[in-house]
Length: 556
Image (cartoon, rainbow, N blue to C red; front, side, top):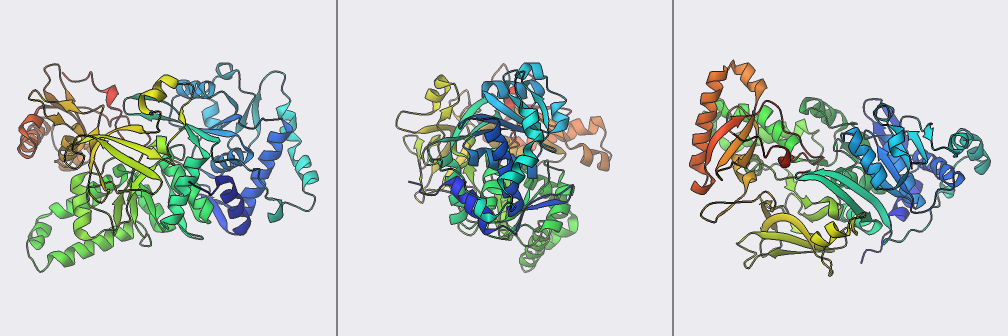
C-alpha cells in the first residue's frame, strides 16, 4: 500500500526547493522559483476560500502547457478540489461537453480559447478565469467572484503581512483514496469517458519516478507532451516538481526541427517522448544517411561497423542534448525497424507501457535492463495477467490490477462495469504476451485486431510498422474492405517527394512496388491487396495514435 501523499510531496518540495527554479516557459523565457509557485498557489487558495469553493468541487483547466497551467493544477489538488484537465486541441463543442459533464464549477482557460467558447453553453460554471493572467473573464449571474478576485491583492497582503514564507506552506491532509483528477482523452475508437484518477494513482506514479531515479533535484527537463494527458503530466510535471527538477515547457508539441533546437539549449536529464517524435527524427535524419551508397558500403566492412555505429550514436546523443540518461518512449508502439537500429547502436532508450486508466504506468525497465521489443516489466504495486490459455506464446487481452488503477468512469457505471471487474481487474484492450521475467510484449489493440478468412489473428499495427519504413510513406493505416481484404491508406511523404521531383504517375508505381515488397515480408493472410493514397496526415490522439474510427469508411 502506498504510504506517501501527493499533497505532502508538493508541500515539502516547495519548502525544500524555495530558491530553485521550478518552471520556465520556453517562448516567453519566464521562470518561477518553487517559492514563487507556492505564493501563487496560496493566492488561488485564498480566492477559493473567499468564494466559498467546496472541497471536492471540479475545476476545468484548458490551455497550453506552461507555468500558469501547472500552478492551477497544484492549487486545485492541494486545496482538495478535483482538477479536470482538457486538451487544448479539442474542438469547442467537446470542451463545453467536458466542462458540463464533469460538473465543473470553475474554468481556467487561455484567452484565445475562451474566444471560441459560448458562455451560455456552460451556464452552470460559477466563474471563468484567464490562464494568461488569472483575471476573471466571466461569472454566473448572482456571483460576486469578479469583485473577490480584484480584492485578492489586498486580502493576500493582510493574510501574510510579513510576505509569503516557507513556514506558510501548509496544505490540508487529503487521503489517497480521494478523487484527484478526471481525465477526458480522445481515443482511437471515439470520444472517451471521464477517467476518475484518485490521489493514490497519481502519487503511485510519482513514487515510481522517484524510486527509479528518473529525475532528481536540480536536473533539467524539457516538456513537450501535452500535460492534459497522463503520460506527460505524471513525469514532465508531477514527478519533476516533487523531486525539485527545473522543467521548461515548450507550450505545444513542436516540429522535430524546433524540438531539436530546444534539446540542444535545455540539455534535459531524461527525455520523455512518444514514438512519433523519435520515428520522425530517425526517418528524416538517420535513415537517409544509412541509405547512402557510401554508408552501405562502409557498413559491409566487418571491422568498420562498430566505429560507424558509435559515431551515429554520438550524433543522436548530441541531438537530444548529450546529457540525458535515457529516452523513455511510451504512449504507443515503437516502430520495430527503429527499435532494432537503436538497439544495434547501443542507444540509451527504453519503451514503457501504461494507460490513462492507470495514470499511466504499468510496465517499465531501465534502458540497460530493457528487453528489446517488449514494453518493460510489471512494476511494483501492479499485477498483470494475460487472458489466454498460453500467456507466454498466445496473445490475449492484458488485464491489470493494483495501486494505479482508476476508480471508474465518471457518471458512467455501465462503461466502468465493462472494463473493471468487482475484484479490481482492469481490461486494457491491448493484446499481448508475457515472459518468465514479467516482461510484457504487445501485439496490438483488441478492438483493431482483425480475423483472417482462415481464422488467424491480424494486427494492423504490425503491418503498418513495416509499410511506414518504405520509400515515400509518411504514415499508413491498414483497414479491411467490404470483401474482408486488407487495403492500406497511405499518407505520402510529400517533402521527400518534392525533393526527389517524383510525379503523380511515378508515385503510383512506387506505391505498388511498396505493396509488393510489403507482401513479401508479411504472412500470406496479412497481404495487402491495394494501397490507396490519402492527402493529409491522419488525425491523432494526444498519444499520437491514429484515430482509426475516422477512416474505416474511406476504403474503396
